[in-house]
Image 1 (cartoon, rainbow, N blue to C red):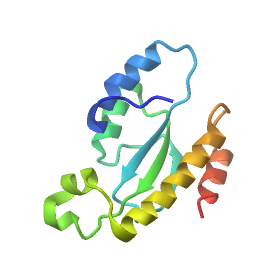
Image 2: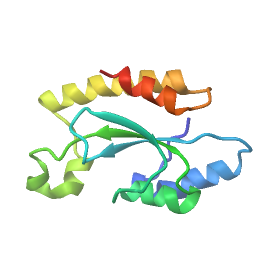
Image 3: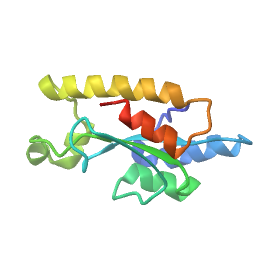
Image 4: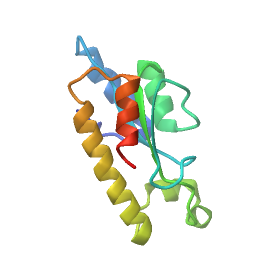
Length: 132
């Protein structure tokens, strides 16, 4: 497991450098997604960056052939107050925080099941289905 010490928007460099030193690897990126409702999780392989700057950075350095675990953060009422950047970098509080906390526990458990095994669409479906 790798957690780059850069901001997500610049993570492609760190991940790309790490992968160049590995003979075999499978990449699973867990990231926020404004277009999914709060607490919703989707898993897919490949695809476009959808305007997500972190995914764009990864795509530029390692290509698009990796798994994506999309964590729904919704647009929320706070987006209008400080804009999208403040919203995605802010903390979830109250009911939003409870939803995110429970969802992240499920994601962590699902990733534990997937680690060390070949990742397939069937496993991805089980992972998402297991989150309720």
